[in-house]
Image 1 (cartoon, one colour):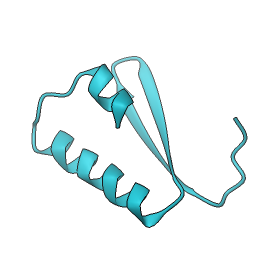
Image 2 (spheres, rainbow, N blue to C red):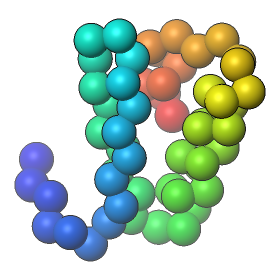
Image 3 (tube, rainbow, N blue to C red):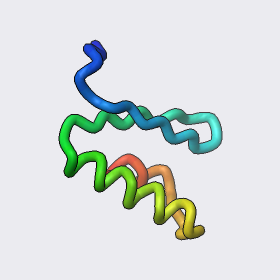
Image 4 (cartoon, rainbow, N blue to C red):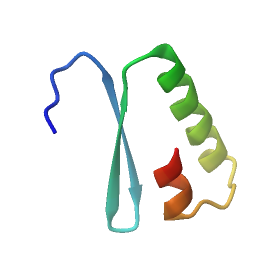
Length: 53
């Protein structure tokens, strides 16, 4: 995968797995921020849940 700089990159670390989330639109940014809020709030998240986001 090539990264050309026209999107924001978010990184989530789950034990020894790194998820790279690329946000190209404001909707993507909003969804990623909601995911971050759920994680910060202490909601139980599994790797499969993060993958589906």
